[in-house]
Image 1 (spheres, helix red, strand yellow):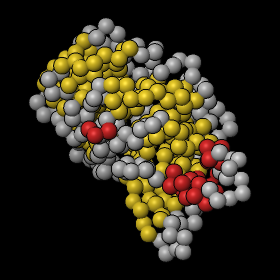
Image 2 (tube, one colour; image 1 turned 90 degrees about the vertical axis):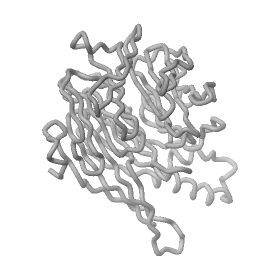
Image 3 (spheres, one colour; image 1 turned 90 degrees about the horizontal axis):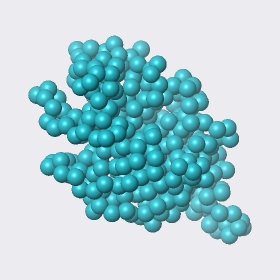
Image 4 (cartoon, one colour; image 1 turned 120 degrees about the vertical axis):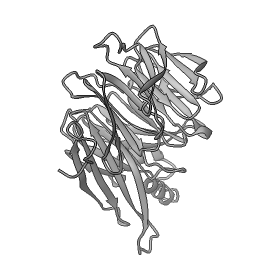
Length: 370
């Protein structure tokens, strides 16, 4: 999603579908980096860009200009080949493009009140979705072909979500997630779960997409805050953790697997029949781990859980320890990577493992700790 602040040097930031690379757009052009090494893989100085989306690690990019030059209209989508440096095709729209998503079969273009779905190989339009006004281009997308869903806001007055199957081209469900309008959402990698946050920013909710049922509610805090990003751990089944970052500068990890274990224990308890799981989940702090000052307060960021590893621990409870790599792109121009770990006693630790300036890196120098 494009940055709304003209004072930030980065105008947009996005990871590719398998988190192996990421791209940024600036007032001068755009750059592509390797997530593992921090190496600058490609750069092009061609003016300001507000959308730069990759298709995995291929040479295809979907790019949209900021409108500072006539050739870089925010109403024109360019499919660009980084190998040849040539535009493969351009699509023009009546209003500004707010977001673009892709997988190996679909190209999705989001405008303020319409969303277009294309066959990415033929660039044939397959469907058009009329939406409520969506001035920020808020959406969530799961690129996996056998669970490829697109989530869009369904209301401007409350936090409801439309979930659309982009492969079969039909509305899958509508989820009433919050009382206030949405500010962030994310789908798990295979489209099984959706996480949402509202304008209040105090509660993160997770729903099962298949039947639109609420599975988890997590309390981020009591004071309102803008949720900048949500991310699931990249797993095929139930993700172990969900990440939320906010305008306070904090990063929050919520443990789904721990909550599931606690539910099992509560199911035979005295109050199991009178206290709903969702209430207990929101109030139980044991599943919630916070890193304060992960980024500077008020600085927008795109943050995700890039990878996770489970490690068996010698414990009678049989609980498995978890390590996660959390990558952060700040719109102030920095890349940071944190290591998060939680042991079998549910005690967590955070370590800043890498940090470098995205604007000063050259092609012959990868990102290293600063």
